[in-house]
Length: 114
Image (cartoon, helix red, strand yellow):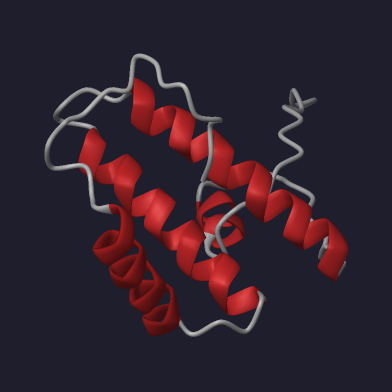
């Protein structure tokens, strides 16, 4: 009996092969090089961020969890402790503020900056 192959070609979570095996499906995976892994982590972060932007109120916690997992994985891959990321977040918030005021910039005479 032939099975249809669905080509995903994307970074997956570590336990996905076990989940596929348990469902008696066949699959193929490979281990990425460091450069490929960095590229795929960033690509996956963008994918998950898009899912956050399209998520309903009920789905958003699941999508935010995916984004957080990727942020932690990226920081770990680059050997940055997550508490260091949180420290930068806190410092940036002190200097530039957060998003609590719901401000939307229409225009300014200054150049757009970071």
